[in-house]
Length: 268
Figure 1 (cartoon, rainbow, N blue to C red):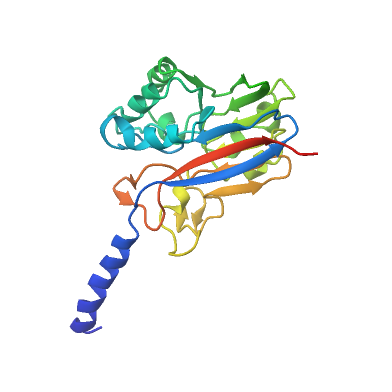
Figure 2 (cartoon, rainbow, N blue to C red):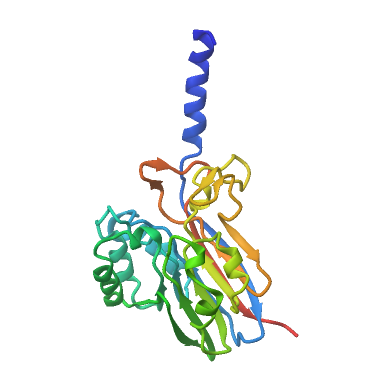
C-alpha cells in the first residue's frame, strides 16, 4: 500500500474507533409475567462495574438507578476489581442502602486476597451476600426467593443438585451467577430467572449489530453476551456490564448497560 493510501486509512480508522467509544448509559428493559407475582415488581440489574467511577459520589450511576424506582437491586458479580481499590463501588452501595440489594461474587472479586473483608464491607452497606445461600424477600405480598453461586473457574464445579438445593420454597426463584455461558447447568436448575454478566457485551461490537467480538471462555463472536434467553424452565438475562474501559481497553459500539426487569402478574 502506498503512502497516500496509508495517509487516508489511518485517520479514517481512528475516526471510526472514536465514533464507537461509549456515549452515555443504555437502559434496557425486560418484562416477565408469572402467576405468583401479585403486583408489579421492578428490579435493577447491576453487573461488572469493576469499581469504575461515574462522577462525584457516583451520581452518574445513582441518579439513573433511582430514576427507575427499583424495589430491589441484583448484582451478579465483578462490582469490585482485584487491582483497583478506589472504593467507587462502596460509595455507590452506601448511597443505595435504602434499597434491598443482593450480590454474588464474580471472578475478579474471587481473585482478591481480601475477599472476606470485601464481603463484610458489602454487608455493612446493606447488601445480602448470597454465595451458596438464598434469601426470601416479600414485596407487596409477593415472595421472591433469591439465591447466588460464587464464580468458580469451571461449570463442572457445581452440580444441578447443589444449586437446586439452595432453594427451599415454591416462590418465584431467582439465581445470581456471574458466568453467562454455563447454560448446560442452568437448563437443569429449577428456577424462574437467572441473571449474569461477565462478557461485557463482547467488549467490541460490529457496528449496527448486537454481535460482540470476543468474551472470556467463549472466544470470538460469542453467543452469550447480552439479552434475555429462554432456557426452558428459566429465563437467562445477561447484562453487558457497567465498566467503560476494561484494563485500558475501551468498549467500541457497545455502551455500558443498566438493566431493568419488570415482574408482572400473568393475565388469565
